[in-house]
Each structure stands twice: as structure tokens, then as C-alpha cells.
Length: 504
Image (cartoon, rainbow, N blue to C red; front, side):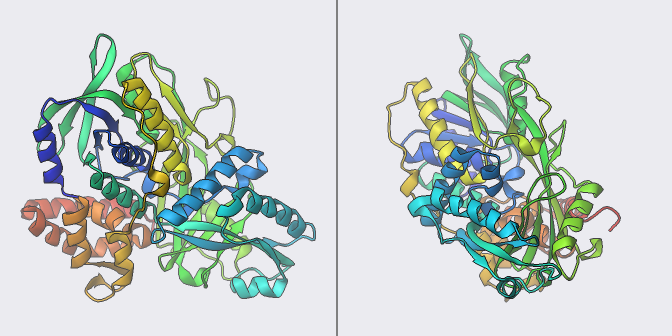
């Protein structure tokens, strides 16, 4: 993918209307772009910052059915999610991988209770299942997770889900969409909706890099902006009622010594009724997540001290060697765009709000897709394109993404290379910077260190230390000057400080 080439294609198309204009370059928007382009529809996607800048790169890194949704009785969501998990394991084997989980038991009734629930989980997966869940003895559980708290341990239940790199899958989806003919542009802000005879007919866009403004007409416009869903809906109708309720999820990253081995730990019940995962990820350990209601949806949310304490406290209950704030390598937060229950907040905790996706069409024809989760992004896209094509009067064509392969790119290749790194603590060198800029439209130091590689999420201090080297290499590739380098380094260093616990 090349940004200049994408801009040139927009110029070439001129005033020719697009079939679909998509607003939002996260998981949902990219999924819709791939589905639409794979069906042969003319599709353009516009993202005001970077692809997967927000929530879509800050997940728990799981492609899963959602064990806790089963406990809530949402069998349909679990079944659909497990089906999508199976499709992704088949279509993206280098990006989505099986991962075994242990649910520890410290009371006599827990193993039978969890065992029955997880057998139902297995059954719902059907022929797309990974492997059967089974009981582990106390000794087997400690062999599986050597740092597991042994005091009072009776055994555990082993089950399987899948793990992925969210930014890696987002970029793979973007590359695949571009390969199918979609035009995707990051740092392109939609300033407003174009209307004719009361119907949405396109978008007004500003190229943030050049400041140039232009208009794109389209047969249908799709709002896939996640936490910013209601902002775009208000462009269409200033009096529209909110559709989403934001919820903040926080993760902390620790050294791998806190969870040695290749397995993960699932804490089945926390003080607020959630579950917590401790997962081996890219040579570190990821612990999360929280579910904190918010009134706003900032692009760069920051973890609250209480959220960090919550994760450390629950991790300490299950680990012999207990982590402290000083052990945290990075902490990151994302905003979930949860579909609001009913027409108001309904008094529900966000942990109780459904993770199903919601499709809405306004009176003027704006299509909005929101809610959902990474696991079901392909199905969300299929439903969205089906609806958008009907509204636009496009020729009906079947969805093909159920059999469309997604291949790894620069993010995954980083893990295989050791030589030439700027810092031995994190996997980034000149090769990764070049790939990010030349092949995946990275435009800033943050793009490279947060999403083309995952360095910022894995070790914030080490990432800040290599920011000058990354900026210098990017300046060569993008034709930037010394002033740009200084500004980029300063911006990234300020950002990296937000990825450390307050006071660190």
C-alpha cells in the first residue's frame, strides 16, 4: 500500500461516484472495505488518523467465543463468535493461532462447574473447534503454569481459544482490501456529509498532510467509526439520540517471567463479575482487562490508577511471584463502542451490555455499524455490505470473505528478525521502519512503534529510547526535514509517558 498512489487513484476517479464511501479505518471499516471490494463494488475508505489507531489496536489480542457471554446466557453470540474464530483460524493461519487456557480451581465444586460450561463451549464450536477441554490435576496445572499460586490449588480446566495481533490483522485486512481494488486513505478527515434532496450522497474530506479539501460522491455512505459513531451521526442529524455507551478497557504488560510457558490463564470471576486474562504475547505477558464506563471517547485514553491497581491485585491472587507497579513495561487503554441498551443507559454496567453489533440506517440513508468485537468483524462487514448494497441499488453479489486468505506483513515479520535492532529489548530496526513506510502507509513515529510494530505496547521506555533513530530513518523515506524529526520525537516521547503508570 502506498499513500501517494491512493491519492493519485482518487484524482483519477474524479467526480465518478463510488459505490460505497466508508468512514473509519478500524477493524469494522477495514472489514467492510475488504468485503465490498471483494464483491466488486467500488469502495473508498477514509480514516482521520492511522489505520487501527484507536480501539482496534488495543484489544486483549483474543479471537474467542467469549466464555463469560455463555455465563450471561448469550448463546447466539458465543456460537457466532466461535464460528468466526474457526473461519479466521483457517483464513489467517499466520495471524490467528490457537492458544490453550487454564481456568484454575481452588474450591471443590469449581472444576466440575467450569468443566461443564467449557464442554458446552466445545459443542457450540462444532466442527470448527480447536481441541477438547479437559480437567487437569493439581500437578498438571502447576506444570502447565509454573508461577500459578499453589496454595489451595485443586486443579483446573484446560480449554482452547485463539490469539492474534490486532494491528497485524487490521493491516492485513487493509492490504487485502487494497489488493481487491479498494482505495484506503489514512490521515484523511471527513469534515461533513454531502446531501442532495435530503439524502446522504457523499463526504467532504480534508487531507491532513496537505490541508487540501475535496468532495467524494457515493451511492451509500457507511459510518464505521467505533467510539466516534455518534459524532458522525450528528453530522447527519444534530438531534439524533446516542447509539453507543463508551467503556474503557485497560491492559498492563509484564515480563514473561510472570507467566512462563506457552499457555494462558483465565481468572473466571473478579470482584466486579468480569473475567481477566493473563496471556503470553510477543515475548511478554498481557494482563487485562477492565470495564470502566465513560461519558467521553478520547482518541488517546489513559489508564486510571484504580484500573492498574485492579489488574495488579487480581494478578497477585493467582501468581506466586506477584507483579508490582515497578514491573509494568507498558499500560494501554482502549474505548469499546458498546451498543446502548434501549434508548438510554438503562442503569446497566457496561460489563453487562451486549457485545452484539448493531446496524442502523438514518432517514437520509446514512448506514451506521457499531458494537460487536474483533472476533466477529468479518460477519459484521458481511451484514453491513448486504444492507448498503440494497440501499444503494447495487447488483446483489455474494460475500466471499469466508474463503479469502489474509497474510502476515511487517508486524509479524518483526518477530523473526533479531539482527539490526535499534535496541535489544524490542523488535524494531531499519527494515521494519522501511516496510512500515513503503508498504503499509506509516506516516509518523507512532504509526511505526505502536502499530507497524508493537513496541510501544510491549515496552514504553525502550520505545521512547529508539524514537530518534526511527524518526531519522522515516525522514529519509518521506523527505522530511530536521524540524519534523524533532517534532516527531517530542510527540512520541510525550505519548510514551502516557503508556507508563502515573508517577513511573
